[in-house]
Image 1 (cartoon, rainbow, N blue to C red):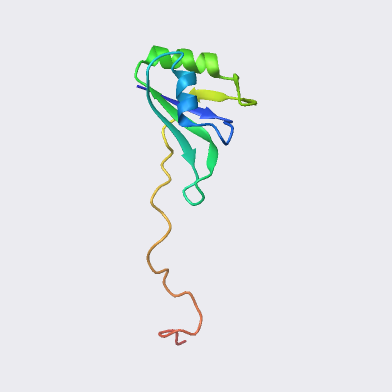
Image 2 (image 1 turned 180 degrees about the vertical axis):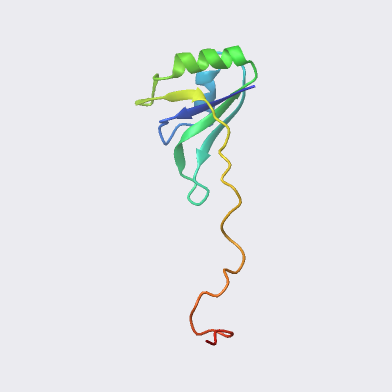
Length: 105
């Protein structure tokens, strides 16, 4: 399975349009154009999954730099998502000062 990152996309490209471009090089399993979860606006990149690695490699080689809707595509093998860790958020940080209860010195 080849997971491919596609960047510098036009903000109005459809998943079907992107799928048809990649299908020139082989079978496409999945296309996911990334959108902002709050606004629904496209973020300008997508991921394409192709089940045959050699076909994915050909697509990467052929499509990197190719113009689509007036923009030169950035196409490469997707890297695994970086582990952001589980820090931050929850818990009480101890005494944070102020005049709340239990703050007698």
